[in-house]
Amino acid sequence: MDCQCCNKKPARIRICDVEENSIEDQVNVCPDCFNLVKRYMFEMTKPLQSTADIVREVQTLLNPAETGLAKLPEPGGIAPVKSSESVPACPECGITLSEFRARGRFGCPHDYEVFADHLDPLFERIHDVQPARHEGRLPESSGGEEIVTKQHKLAELRKKLEAAVAEEAYELAAKLRDEIVELEGQPKAKERS
Amino acid sequence: MGDIPNSFEHFPNILGEWLKGTGPESDIVISTRLRFARNVKGFPFTGRASNPQRRDVLQLVESALKEVHLDRSVVTLELQNTPEIKRDVLVERHLISRELANGEGPRGVAFGRGEMLSIMINEEDHLRLQWIKSGFDVDRAYAALCKVDRALERVLPYATSQRYGYLTACPTNVGTGMRASVMVHLPALTLKENIDQVFKAAQRMNHAVRGLYGEGTRAFGDMYQISNQTTLGRTEESIVDAIKAIVPKIIEFERQRRGQLYTEERSLVEDKVLRSLALLRSARRLNVQEMMSHLSMLRLGIDLGIITDVPAAVVNELFILGQPSHLQESEGQTLPPAERDTLRAELMRSRLAAGTN
Image (tube, rainbow over all chains, first blue to last red):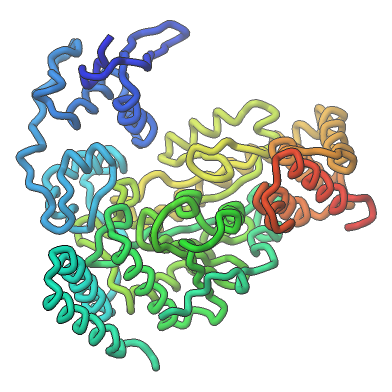
């Protein structure tokens, strides 16, 4: 039997909804989909009610064209899910919305801006709050920018150096190395001597 | 900046303040723990950061800690080259998480005197600031942690947004990035099979109940952690207030059941407690679960006045010292389980022998 979630891999795990000692509903899934389903079962503050609901939620993370959403019985019928493919990947860290949904982790702080339109419903459910807006404190001032800028520059230079070496562009590599040494040697603006 | 110690020279030999067995409600509450999840602006979260980027974050935090002069005793320990057994010791002491211990790449932990402050670097978030206090003391732990956080934010730019607050790798921590976690000892509620009621009541109020070592761990020794589940859309103060409202109710419930046990089933509870004491004083082999369940009975016995010659602090310490990595660390080598069980039994006998305390 194929997994009722991805409809691709063989199903190995049966998830049953039990009510008063009788099995109300059951879904058979593969181990990969089970891992995703598990997250929805245990990590949400307000978990979805039935396994079928959870499986439908998980299917939205997978490519809808391949999984064939219609194959799962839908008594109430749900609106077709907007494909997350139309949302561009984060330009800073390269993560896509479906990747975020599948892993449950952001790639970088910038993702919160890039995926903003898709986050509120998720946050509202996780944090049981509406609207999903921060109410607590924020840093009074953000100093220390200088140190970070320098570290960024260094990281970028090191990346370029790696690429240059890989391409055997040794002249460029030597230049980059000198730049790195120079930057590393500079005393930090905020550090005590 | 090559001065991050790799050795354990700076590793504190005495156990943390939180094991003292003092502080408010310490007959039931072992410790209060507050943590803030923070990330450094401009870097990808740890899970997506390259090793050079992780190294940069580690160094940035390290120099920020030096700059703010929190306390001269704050020591940063690089974990990448720290042997596994030492990392496990830190986990058993609640200074770092299992995830950080088993993680990869440049990462570290900074901790202060008495092990009240610990700062995990490059866990799931760049920083996890944590303050542990003995007993039920949310206000003080919160105030102490805020002080550290405010000092750090002046020299280290955090990733924040007006809309979502402190930005974290996992959406379950966004907003305040704050988790208030109270470790409670609930032997009477466990004995009386009321623990499920506590779980459900806490859940209804958006709080989770977990085992001693966090998510997914079993509640050995009748120890449970109660913590807030939600971090967005409420202020830090309201998270503090919520846990301050919930925990006393659980404490009261446990006390009531203890009283009931002692008045209505006195011989039963005395029998359980004294059997546990006799067993710990005589056994030649003990596994962790056995040790923890008997130590749990000892704590209950001390509180009910059945045991008078063992201080609570000794029992609290044994909970940690009897853990696998602590035993192996004290022997300086890895040991097979059977040998650990023998060593554990020896430790219990020597620390609990009549007349030693």
